[in-house]
Image 1 (cartoon, one colour):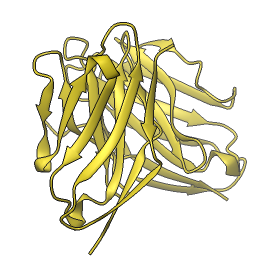
Image 2: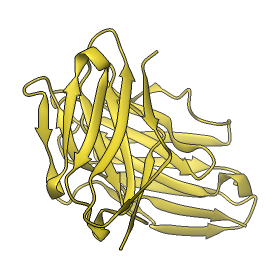
Image 3: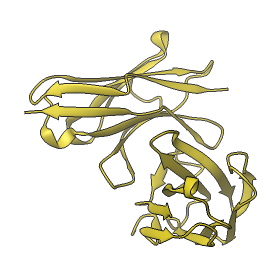
Image 4: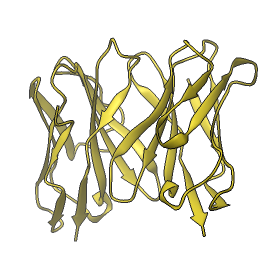
Length: 111
Length: 114
């Protein structure tokens, strides 16, 4: 069965610092990959997606992720954190007709 | 498009009562998913439908939970009788098979069972 692993349930950064959220998937066939963001008391919103076109994917709010097949990874980065980036981030991989989600990483941004 | 619509947004009920959560998916989407989110267990897939037909309900916790999709624009998740441990945020999501399985989530229903 496919699985998605997000390293670190909580990540803390200072405003202006680099954001790096890690995601690894387990699949013999590279799936479609997604990053979703959940702000407090809201549903999940799509940040970006990898659909086998380009390995470096740019999303909303300055986020980007790079697909690395050799490392089965799809890490999310942002050069400079903003207070408004504080939220929970979920990595997901497509299955036959569903998505397998990681357990989520809470991003904490301090001034 | 208005996105996925869920109602109610908040529900407070007493143990033993019946609870019905409602979802309207995005028009044209052929998959509908029900999730539950709690601090302890995270995001759990309960059941999903394809073209109004339930495909996998293995995530439904017990017989107290049931879900229906009578037509392409409406689905319900019912809990009867409700218990305090059912307190959670319930999300509905929809997707289109031809769009990489990207799911669009509703705002959720926060259920509190006293």
